[in-house]
Each structure stands twice: as structure tokens, then as C-alpha cells.
View 1 (spheres, each protein chain N blue to C red):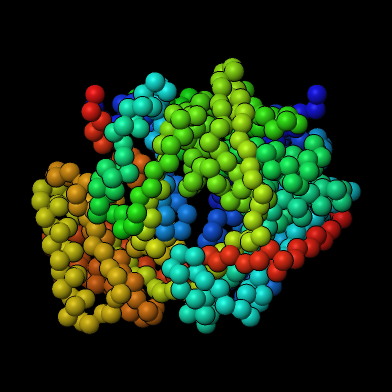
View 2 (spheres, rainbow over the protein chains, first blue to last red):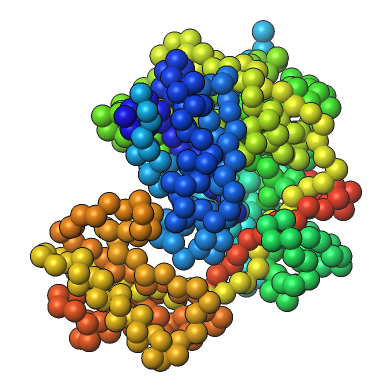
Length: 101
Length: 445
């Protein structure tokens, strides 16, 4: 199943760093996210885009993960050559990731 | 028990004005807070101020004030905003002019200055946080340096009787934390309460992003009435708990999902969210839907603020030249790719100097590069070339080479467009808090 079926997401930017939240619609699915959506998988998923490290933070209080991706935005909103200057479309891409059932 | 109702009147500089008016009219709020200052907005405002000493505040300041001042005055709603950008004192003057024009009298406007530290930082060496390099490597190109102030000067202005507080660079949550600390008399070292208020401020600061804006995904995340999206209200108690809601008849929605997305928006480590007022911790925040469009927020805590303030530095970094042209019908993608290949070859033949360049096919791979972009044949594509140069003359040549594809490129090129611009890039440094001195100046209509 695609991540989109059980979770939603929003991307934010600060300088050259992007963060993507992954939030379970149903808190009962949070352990599934914790197990399958690892920093390593997210780093590999965005291999063409993210030049730096990917760090994962866990927020069981709201059933969510937060991925912080360094050197992800071509120098940041004012400097990047990318069409998506804030990297705001990255969360939508991640919703395509497969989650084993 | 005393409750304070705060409304968020804007989530960024160009935001819509009508929802702010709706909040003032129907939101039963005591404060209307407008967050209008992104990282880069202040550098652009600083350049405007250099050309005209009376400029440098938010472009929509007068329009926003004209729209909300009459009703705010009538209902006694106080306004707090960072629309002063690079020039809060000129912004206060502008508000005074608007009030006079509207026939409003007895209004006290406070301008908070002191965030501009460009001259202060020139004297010393600092490490650039993003690159680890010394600030002196870009000292000839500096445009702006603004320290993030906290809630203290806003609280001082409110104690001074201000109806409107206009600031330059202050931390976004401080626009909301300040009126709460003032109203409830919170101590500036009650770290847990400041942490809770930072959670509330962070949830509110992007306005429509918590009422269903930037959320809708048809079939998965439907948002009712998004066309007339309302902005949020936080009803806050003295213990730092709050309910996020909206005007009942306004469009949009406040749900656990909208609140959770906003809690993590632009957050790195949720256990250590650094602001000038507190290091906030979001990891024990609890959200409960207590009624339709009413989400209760509890939890959040904090530890003492650090001795340093973050300073955003703007500097002239480079130039970007860009050109785009579209292709449609059978073979559109192949012609678009040929167009990109042609421009690449010609820029090389002409010796255009770029330090970085990208060739995108919009509709195929422009957002997520090769591996994430599935192979498909779109009906139309837009070829895009964008390159970084060290001067404007070189930047202009990039767009020209795209435009000349009309008569020198693949068949059916359409709608060419080109641009070249100077890039003000942003980096940050940390400076000792003791180097930053704020001031509060009042204007009375």
C-alpha cells in the first residue's frame, strides 16, 4: 500500500533544510510508520534531491514522524535554481512510498 | 476565568485581507496578529529602504490597516504585526496616516526597532551557521542583518498602552506569546508557560494553514468551503491550554489533522525549538477534538532561552538567468528535450559562464529530478533553463538563448518567456544577546 492511504504530510523549509512531517490518520497506524518509514528509506527515496543527511524525529504524542533533510533545497528559497523554490512539493512525492502491510 | 482570544490576520506578506476583517468583525477577539515577514522579505525591504528612507515596510500595510482599523477601533481589538519589516518607524507613520484619513483619533501606535544589527556585526567576526565559513568572506556583499527579537519589546509596548504594535524582525511565535504573557502576567522565566505559548504561536502564525489552507487533497483530505477559507482563533487560558477554532460561518475546518500538520511545519527537532524567548519542547503536546472545528491544545513545555540570538543575513550572492518555452501535441516531450539540448550546446559554444545550471522539462521531471519522475508521455511540456552567473549581463544571455528557439529550435515552440535577476541569498549567524538593544517609540493620532 502507498503511504498516502494511511498518512498525510506537509513540507516546510528553513534555509537549505527541508522538513517533511508524516502523520498517521489513525494513531493505531503509527507503529507501522515507525517501522517502515525510516530515515534511510527517505534518504534513498530523495537521492536525486537531498545532498545531506536525513534525520528522523518521532512524535508518538500525535502519531507522527518528522524528517529533517539537510542540503535539500539548492541553497534555499532565495538562491535555488529549482522551480519549486521552497521544496513544497516534496511531501506529495513521499506519499507515493510503499508501506508493507 | 479569564480567557484571551487571539486571531491570526495573515500568514505571510502577500496573504489575503478579507479573512482578517471577518475575524475582527465576528471572531470576538481581543488581539489580531499579522505575521508577514519571511526570511527573504526583510532583505528585499532593506534594499527598498536604501533607495528611499521612508520605505521598507510591508507593501500591504496601508491596505490591511484601511480594512481592519475601523472595526478594530470600534471593538477595542489590539493589533500586533511585524509588517514594519526593515522600517518599523516609517510603518508606524503610515498607520498614523491611514488612521487620520479614516478619522480615527486617540490611537497609540508603538514601533519596535533594534533588530537591524548590520553595523554591529560588521565590527566582528562570526561563523556562518550554514557553511561554517567566516562572515568576512561575504562582508563586501552584505545587504541586511536582522536579529530575531523576542516578546519583551512587544510586552513593553502593550504595558505602555499601545493599541497597535509594529515590529521588524521578531520571532513569529512572539507575536502571539507577547499578548498572552502581558494579559496573564506570566513571568519571563516561566519556561513551561512560554513553551506552551510558543506551541500556540507556532500553530497560529501561518493563519489559514491551520484552518484547511495548504491541506486539501480531494478524495483524501477534503476541505469544506475552502473558497471562503477563514483564519484561526486561539482561545487561551492562563494555564497555557488553548482551543483552536474559527468563525463558525467561515469556510475551512479545524481538525486534529490540520493542527498536527501545522505543529510540525518548519520544525526540526521537536524537543528543542529555539526562539529568543524559550527553547520549546513539542513532544508532549496533546490535541483533542472537543467539538466541530474546536481542537483543544494542551502540553508543551520549555527550558531556558540561550544567550544568543539568531541573525538573518542577506547578501548579494549571484544572478539567475532563466528562460522557458512550451511544446504540445505528439512528440512534445522529445521536442522539449531537443530544445534543452540545443540551448545547452549553444551556451557552451558562446562561452556563457555559469557556476550552476539546470535543464527542466516541466510536466516531466522539473520538480523531482529523474528517479521519482515516472515515464509517461504528456500532451504538453515546458522546457526551462535556469543558470547562475556572476553578473547580470551573463544572466541575460541564458534567457535569450531560450527565446531564440522560436526561429532556431524545434517545431512548434510556444509562449517563450525570459527573466534575469539579482539574487539576495540568506545565511544566519548567532550573536550574543547583549549586543542587541531594542527601542519602543510611540506615535499618537
